[in-house]
Length: 304
View 1 (cartoon, rainbow, N blue to C red):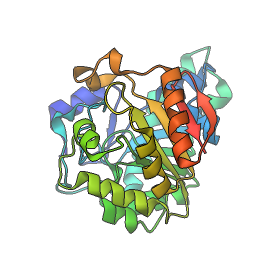
View 2 (view 1 turned 45 degrees about the vertical axis):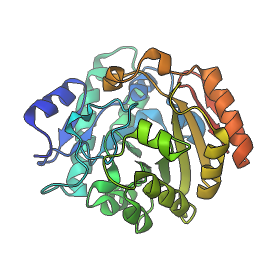
View 3 (view 1 turned 60 degrees about the horizontal axis):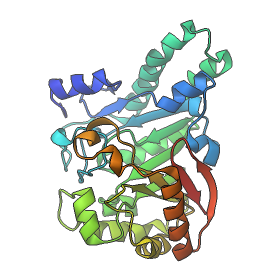
View 4 (view 1 turned 30 degrees about the vertical axis):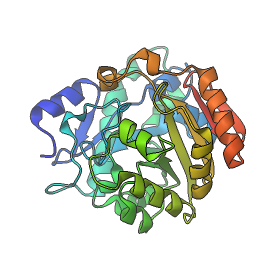
């Protein structure tokens, strides 16, 4: 098993549902999936990219695996593993069971008079996979086939990577619909302090992945999580790094004080929407992009 029974129970209590036999893959209902079904709002991904929140499957094939222990990460970092260990479940099993788990988690809405019936029916057959729930998905040995299997089922796929597994990114045979690369520091010092890499050459790996991003045919996106007092400085350096990657989009988003990150950071580290927007504007000036969309409730802006 990839996780101890105790760690699994803790995550299940917070809404995770593990799928497969080996304890490394899971699904969890996103807050915005629920809100959309109740007609109370949608995720910024729907506003920015047209992804239907009520038909989005939030999942990960690599829950405990990551090469970083970022200060702002909302997961419990005590069970982090930097390299794959042991056996793993195949992509078809993971996808089938993740969809089933999502449907089981949503079944309670069928007894809710406030739920949108049309959206509820559509939610049974999700059409987008947010491969970003927890961990670093490129560490899953069959990430290529997982994306390919989603493609065969007419899903769009949003894959979020920390850019540490450079060779995997360079050699992805099946590109996701949109590839995210996390860029959470403008310099090696801030990267080491905020992202806390657990392997050697973390900053070098990230820069190599940034250079690799420009070679992708799929849509690409740089995502920066802004932590007040930690990494909201040197916008020109962020701009230079973004220019190297030449992404389709850039998302500048506020750190949210949730989950286990509250043990490491406080509400004071959570920037206001105006602070995020101003920082994004400065970054845009240095990489030739401008703000084209925004979501105040999620404290995120889109540069293009």
